[in-house]
Amino acid sequence: MAETTLTETRAPREASWISRNKLTIAPWIFLIPALAFFTIYVVSPIIESISISFYRWNGLYDAAGNSTAVWVGFENYIRLWDDPKFWTSLKNNVLWLFLFMLAVPAGLFIALFLNQTVTGMRFYKSMFFFPFVISQVVVGLIFGWFYNPDFGVVGSIWKAFNCEETVNLVGNATFRCTGTPPDILSSPQYATYGIIAAGLWPQVAYCMILYLTGLNNVASDQIEAARLDGAKGWKMLWYVVLPQLKPATFIAVVVTVIGALRSFDMIAIMTQGGPFGSTNVLSYYMFETAISEYGERYGYGSAIATVLFIIMLFFISYFLWRMYQDEKEAR
Image 1: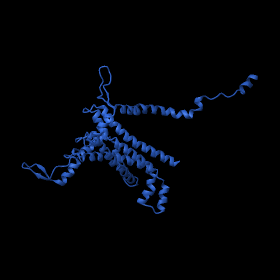
Image 2: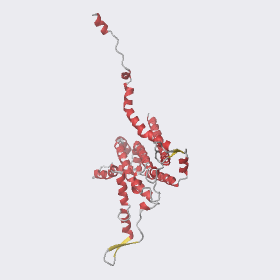
Image 3: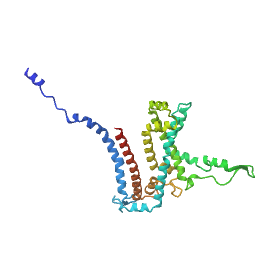
Image 4: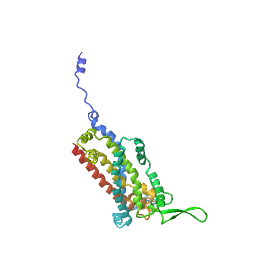
């Protein structure tokens, strides 16, 4: 009887440290693997690239396995200042940035059109979704054929207005043209604009998808209230719809800016930086300098990559600050 009483009155066992802090530990169990991968595959390469930019190195090692890199300090960055190819690439990046922003309003207006309920809308949506699901490499090849002056769409349209069909001495049909058809990708003045137009095609589709998602979350009661107050057309769009699309607009601008700054694949497929380096951007010039068969200047290429990283870091920091301010105001 005494033993039973002692057992019943014994103090409860103290919970372990893990049990008391499981709500604090649980998020870190999921975060630690992601942070480890981010550190290994993002942070570490960035730090290594910045460190290599202070060396002159061709990527080789001596017989003993030691790096042949030579410390040069800021020499690579000083050379960038006097490098006309670097300034051409930077100018093209700025051009990409400004013209790529056309994808945001274009995606918005296409989304407004596709948000209607009309016959055949599923077919129209699938046509506008198409550029988003195909590879950038395929887009580059399609527009390369599109711009071809011999059999492309641009050349065919030019011939329709500037050529007339004749018959030669042996009876074969030929064309007599006033001039030569435009070769956009071979022109230093227009090649960059041609590539940007090709890049805008899938980017507009991406912004359109973001806005279609946002339009599905627009409050219908606010739309009805605005209609009762007499709002319609541009006033409805500006004062009622667009304020509710602010999160979608923010994401569209962010991905468009990042896409413009990291433009590489379209240039690699369509012009390889030509003609005469006129279509180079920082990412492709970095590849051409450091990795391609004409380069093997890893220190100089890393300096270019560091400049591009600083530019992207500025925009990303600004967007994160804006996001923080918006969340702070929402509270």
